[in-house]
Image (tube, rainbow, N blue to C red; front, side):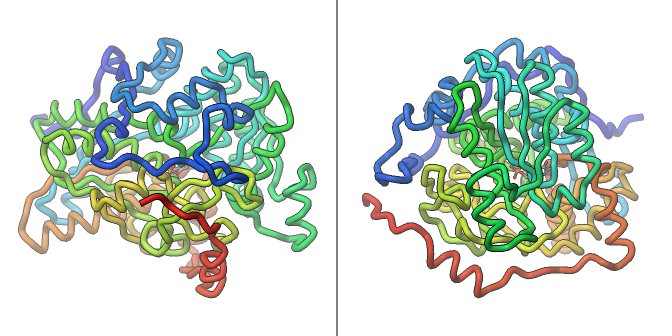
Length: 456
Ligand SMILES: *Cc1c(COP(=O)(O)O)cnc(C)c1O
């Protein structure tokens, strides 16, 4: 038993703070702009949507933000999550690489998302909020917030992207089991939803549309706020428990990553595993290559423009500078629903623009090939989103093999795929199509980006 496959920390090692990369950036983030005036946003502008504690976390430059004890108390149920050494996968690949994966599928909702859902529910409860609205793609965020809402006694209303609502009835059932209300989006319940349905009755929906609907309702009511599962600085902040734990676990393994790989939808699980390491590098520590893997059908980092854009389709949200495919872009309905967002987190976009990370895009069948190979070696069945990270890590391991180099690869296995079996069945039936987005639609969406003059 001399070669460990699992590195486990006890509950006392749950991080006591979240790590804020804004403290270590060589160049600060571009300001968030008001959608009406195009002037930098003040904290009060966000107050209808978020409790003040989260608004403060959005802009703070403090390196360490303390994690409230009640949040750590909930984290204890599944954190610290295990770090595995993928020895059987290494053997299957015949690679000299050392492959590690942090497994976030052990959370009650089955992904990394409860790390921020619990924190957001806590701060909203503290601010006297009784109801949260949100959007969900594949349903992981909706079920995570539903779980957190149940713990803190907050009603949760989830707008679920139509294609996922139809493809994933069990995720919907999970949300309802936790007590949340789940509505397919676009819906007739909001102005933004009705406007879309008038143009196209069978619209498949998108995260951008679902966000508009959730924001619209939260903005109208004093007892209701809005929660976002990715993209925003405070969400990425909450996910840094993942990377901090991985760092301690790799220390147990007497190792340090040469390459870190994560999949990117809005950028939160990727930032969660990578930013603590990137921060250490920025403070003079060891250089790490960091690779973001995105779907070729929705390639914001590799094909989008780094520009100011709206976070939603109806243009109710502030403008943020990010890699974007255009807020009116509707990506094709592929199976990694959690990666179907037109934009990318401003912080991830910023470090990409600074050349501190790399990005690659893969088609879904190649990612499922990788996910199935992983499942057959390691036993864990990854979420379709996580398959992108698996594919990225396997490619890095094969590069090591070709070059005869033994490098340490760390990737985030951000969730399990137990609610995504229809996708696997389609894959085995040969029914998965590698869809490309419509180039014309992308060009049009990019041409419609808001015109913002930036200070030099
Ligand atoms: C939501 C989700 C994603 C995409 O969101 P990020 O913010 O990019 O992490 C990826 N994987 C899983 C399992 C998810 O639930």
